[in-house]
View 1: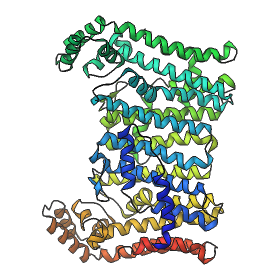
View 2: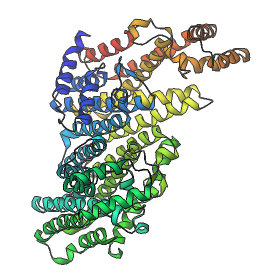
View 3: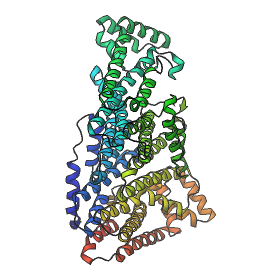
View 4: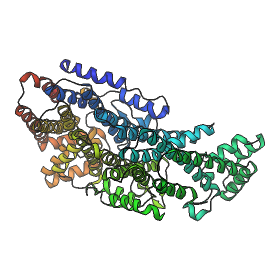
Length: 319
Length: 319
């Protein structure tokens, strides 16, 4: 294998330098762990060798080689779940050391990382925006899952979670359209901000309607979030404002088994604390913020009509 | 929503025309199912609207819009597993209707499809090759899982499964290097074929060593495939050649609980049927076939040295 070590070194160096973000920790740590337990790196070595047969090894070749290795590791992460494998290369598999959800989601974000590497040499603004957004969506889902067991979730953490999980993809969707049509960067950015803020409003409204909506229209039963002890904006805000005795009542309601009592008493507490009103204001804040970006775009009114129609549709759909 | 229906129609038309492959059925059917249970298609509508604000809607805009919708559905498929959700839009979720493995893998292949759509306007040979390969790897994994419960697996189906699951990525890795270095298409194709055939040989050898290797070097215990009733080349070939009475012995051994007896008697049957020898010939066949492509590439010998070293490394590693 001596002949092969220069190739291997290039690959390992690049993998070490990948630099995953620090948070969410339980999304990225499994990747560092899994990539460090090794493997023969046959695939990326083949890419470098294939490149060198016809020319010298360029940085693009190293990027693509590492992208292929990351993709391979993504498939292993998911295969190990499906095969119920406890060990990989004599180390615990990710779904064993963490859990299945972590292995699914870390795998997904590894696939995005792989695509970034594969496309680096030919990447353009659109694919970069999309892949960045894809990573953020995974991060948002991880935060959401973390919140299930996390004791103190702040309102700003919650907003950040829904921004990543739901909203950035709306911003990305709008901006992609603008990119394809050759809009200038400022207008693109405004559309992205519009989409993201409307997205946050949309998600807050979803939470709101789950508790205060009129059941049949929402398409799911009222109070579902309350029954599953979900930390929504309403719940977090209520906790923030609650007196010690109200906090104890919330605490007590977490283990209430009768669904009707649980919903009724939680809603009663929400009303005492005025969170319905605060939530509506917050929704309105993000909608208005979103719409302000639309007003800043210098286009004739009729060009904005369709976008306004979607926003109306989203905003009024169940109020 | 009347103002929005022209956008929605464009999206739905494109989604209907996606045309997933027919096989593996349980990889692609869940996708048709999941995409058909609807959703508001807000994200792709936003892309079309964003595009139309600054220009007209091009086919590229529709591709990217649908790519974003596919990505969104991929995240839903995986989120539903993590959230343990029984229903999505009042329909059974994929992991409920099929199972978790199907939902993971169908999701993965949907992500690949999404990338194809997103990159269509800027796709080049390298990204197309990579994405095609990524889909094939998912298909191979699905076939492998299907084989666990499939009664009759032919040798050619088995070879096709390992070609997809393991080998095409080796071919892809080599070809990617050649593409980056500007090799001509014929040489690229030869490297792809070389990688794929060496990959098949490599996987067959892996099966072979699991039964006939020398334990410590392989990194896993001898006989693991036999104990888990895995349908390897050895097993399928043995069944193909077995007399009625030998078939009954195999049948009987499937439920043998004593691991030593199970391994010893299976290996004894393998030896009666000469499958060790047949398997070695098959490995040799694919290795030679792979190497023949290398001989056809018109390059000075020293340019082929590194590739030969990897092949040697793979081939001789435990014999």
